[in-house]
Image 1 (cartoon, rainbow, N blue to C red):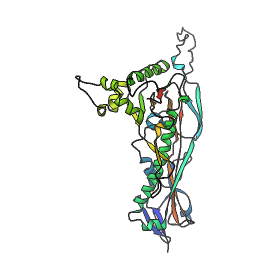
Image 2 (cartoon, helix red, strand yellow; image 1 turned 180 degrees about the horizontal axis):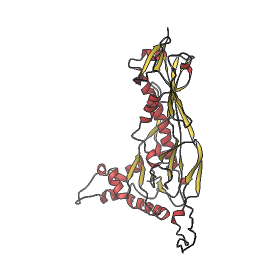
Image 3 (spheres, one colour; image 1 turned 60 degrees about the horizontal axis):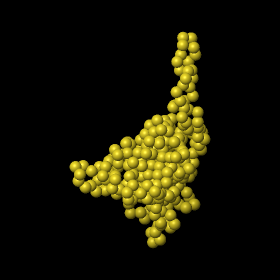
Image 4 (cartoon, rainbow, N blue to C red; image 1 turned 90 degrees about the vertical axis):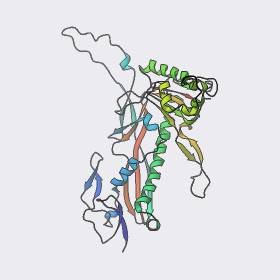
Length: 364
């Protein structure tokens, strides 16, 4: 008699069942025409043939949607927007709102004039990012803890890998000079943030440029870790927040204090790190570690107009993702005697208004 892994629909936990046992309440999950998970009243894992089919695991899907990494800031700059389709035209914004019409004064009997409010778009096809994990029967049997502990550990590793790659895609968009309008990507090599420069003045100068091009200030600022260290150790910055003439330390320069100085709602610091070279496994050589927000060049600091999440508000960029994504699907692989969980996520960050942000790169 052989054991199989199945998800108990009442408890949500992974349990064992031999092939002769058929739980009356077990259900498999399918997607409707909109891609939303729905229950179908059919047994799955207790039946050997149905157990081979790929099914959506709603509990594992809920787990991967809940995993977070406190060091990731990309979604706070490129606000996620849920889309029903994998491809299509997404709004891109111009300067229509700043043109004052000459014909809005209407006389009796005249037609109401019509205005073009938004005429641009970005053609976008969302990419699928996918990774899978498997738990072999022998591994499951020798594991000292519960099966859910083992599965959650593996799913967490998968989720963090894809989330980190998403962060790097967003960081690359935000720190590539060619992605900005003319005059909004400025070399910081001569700004002397490490010595006698004035970072607050430089950032407010950038705010003024963004204001002239967009009619409002950027509402969020971002720093790579190296640029943040230059900012909080700069004497001109520290002098601005002195109280009563007493000396202060860099530790007192918090993101909240920096937000007040820069007149933004929030200051975000890119601390996410990634490794390359070796995979860093046990008893292997260590990977080379680097900061995601310094992957294009070191020491970046900038400002952005960030949208609220509707996708139609003028903003530097958004992260488009499919409405039923991410999802985890599960099936049993007889060839490897393993239960497999495949994670898939459809998304892509994109720039929608290149004048709605500005940054300094290679600060020194």
